[in-house]
Length: 411
Image (cartoon, rainbow, N blue to C red; front, side, top):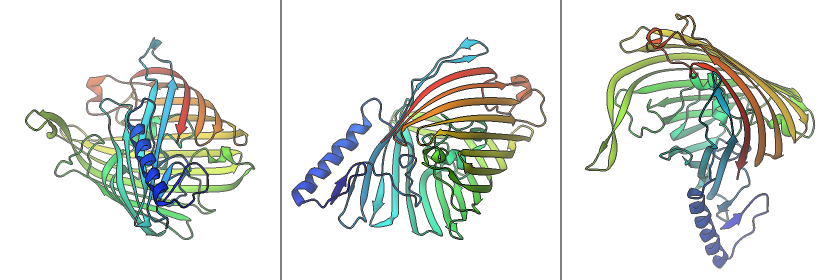
């Protein structure tokens, strides 16, 4: 067994030292679950992933042959974020994410796992828990609670996005995290990535999937000039101008989802889901393009969706967003802007969403410590609840302004 932290080279342990290593791991893992300020995002920091990407050299324990490995980590996001809605000050949260996680490999390096919790919400909940099998680069399977494939941007997670959060429009069309199975892989010397899966259509905090619910999804990405980086700000960390690369994605999904409420059972002390009878059928398609050229990164997505809610008229939604980042100082500073637009229902007038953001980011010790300073303004119009009916909006109606000082910590 070996134990290592950071980039230090791991050395074999004596049996006595191995016992100490296991004890240190147990203490570190349990400590991360309780103190304020703990957190994690997906498998680890931006350079880490459980999908065949190099693992971040954080705290880990490994067997002598390297086949069994346990990584204990956490990510946290802290914010100072004054916000107004139509000129009135709004409530705000100082801690955006607190996510401890354990990940690693078991038996073989291509059998991977991840379990992660969110402690910044009340009550805390399970964010991810899945097992991944990928014996070859061309084919792999992920089973459990996970990100659904729609939107590369959403799949990066907030620890690897360029601006402080994922985009409002991308969030509006994303199918979220769900329970199911995903087949994925890389073909043609990693110039084509694909994802296809079937999911239960159950929200993140609903542990039981209702009978009849399902979501089918697929995504294909073409990287004609080679594989793209594993974070939206990787270009800002390069010591020299980035090689020019471009990438394109087509994606879509279809599903039937019945809403549920949770009722507390005092006999079993469990929350039990109960179907509401309100069923939505949704089908959507989308595309994206990502360009890296020297000190510039440009990324954009566009979506169309048809929603057929029970007891109400079907409606179509469209939206698009894009962002551009420019490296100012290699490895230390960049500037970025983002703009977003959505029409929640093409049959309605006065429901348009429009937003814009600008930021400066300082990569103090990326990906472990990043500081972001952002100003954003958005305008969500609404024709009123009676006219909206079953139509949902991407944001709260009104004009929102926000200033953000954010610190990302990844261990």
